[in-house]
Structures are given as C-alpha cells and as structure tokens.
Image (cartoon, rainbow, N blue to C red; front, side, top):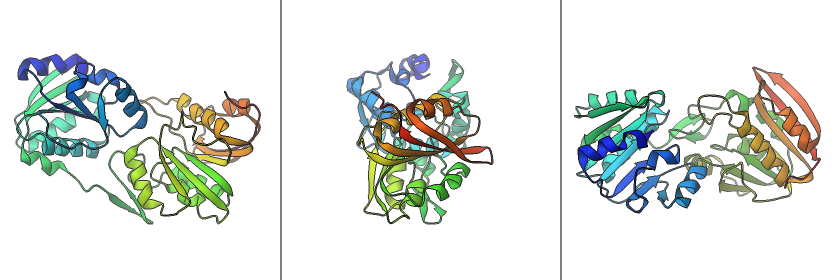
Length: 325
C-alpha cells in the first residue's frame, strides 16, 4: 500500500507541499500524508465519507494547482490513464507519483507513461510499485473522452461497473421489473439501466436511483431523463432515504476485492428490508452460487426463485417478516 512506499518518495523529493491524491481504495493509502495539506479525489461515497471523517478534504474532481499528485492505481486501465492526465493538469511544475499493487495494474501504467518518453524513478516494495516523474503537459495526452456511447441511448464512463455494455444479469432481470407500480428503489443503480426499465411502467410513481459511484450517478442523470427519477449518491448498504417503498430492485455487487464477497449483497438485502413497506417486494438477480436465500428468509415471509439461467438466478421476496432495527 502507499504508506509502505511513501517514505521513499519523501526521501527523494523532500516535502510534498500541497498534495492531491486520486482514487485511494482505503484509508491506509493516505495514512502517511498530513490531512491539512491533502485534497483527495474520490468517487465512491463510502470512502469519501470515511476520508472526510478522518480530516481530509475530499472532492469528486480535482481543481486548482498542487505541488504533488499521487495516483493510486485501480483495476481500470482507462481510469488510471485519465487520473494521470488530470494530475498533469493540476500539477504544473511539481511531481506525479504513481502507486499501486501489481494486481491493480501499476506495472502496465508505468509502462504506458514510459512510452510517452517520461523519465520514471521506480521503487518496488510490499508487492507493489511506486513511480516518480516530473509533471509535463505531455501526460495530458492520456485523457480519453469523458463519456462513451454504448448504444441504446446509454452512456458510461471509465471505471464504472459494466462500462462496456449491459451486463448479462441486469439484462436478465429487466423483463421482470417493467410493470412495477408505486415507489421503487434501485439499490446499486449504476448508470441507470434497470431504473430505465422500471420507468417503462406508467404506474411507477417514483424511482430512487441509489448508487455509491458518483461518476455512475452522473451517467444515470443522462441515461434516465424522466421526472419520476430521483438520483441519490449514497452507500446502498446504509441508505435510509425512505421507509415505505413498494419495490426494491437490485443487481448487487459481490466484489470488494478480487474474491467474491456475498456479505456485500447481503447488506443490500438488509437495506431493502428497512426501506420497504411491510407488504413490499424485493426483486434481485445474483450469481446462482451466492447464498442470499437465508438472508432473504430472515426478513421476508415468502422467497421464490422465478428464473435460473446463464449462471444467474432471479429471486423475489415478499412481505417483511421482521423490520430490521
């Protein structure tokens, strides 16, 4: 992590001055930096709130001028490149430092900047690498278009879930949610595909799109042009915006790292049990091996599998059994 390599950068450069950090995935990555001198670019609401509570200034896009930029590598090559371009735009005469684990694409990112003719000082430690280079206008060439058109009237952007097109599971769920009525919540709404399917029904009065990735929310605002849509940049595992939804729909994420984490989807189900009307229904799609049925049965009187295909299952849960506290 960054804290294991940051002292090397400090020894090489001296004081960092005013720092901007792009996309840390955990608070340990910035633990070696003084909060009063640091601005963090963060799109994910849970991390945004955690870092803000720790005293860091957080923003969703970098503005101003900084002395040093840290780019924390993510698994999205395009997002990494855009972060470097953004860093070059706000660090005019200082340094850009790339940091990340080998599993997060740091080696590929370093190779890419070297291809631009950048002189890079690389330090390896703790299964990752840190690379230091001088900021240059040339690095802004890394920038790619902010939005990509994936067809059917949808746009996405780098780093969001299913950025290249509609994922199989969501496409499988869509026909099951096109005739809903009343107040609907799309937990983990992403860039809006499922919400747009819900809004095909004239009987849907309000659809809350709850999504933790700010960039995905901004795409959803473009993709879902309907006055019944309410956009919520929020952590779906803790959101409590309403308590009487008629339906919750979801294709919950199940990765917090490279390993599957069913606890994340289970937390989405817990949220659904808190925001649904007692007679409301939850409709979800999930990988067939994920163990959601026990969690559903703890909170709902009736749980039914209505479809099983292509490695995914669609589950419908009705009638709250016990309101979660």
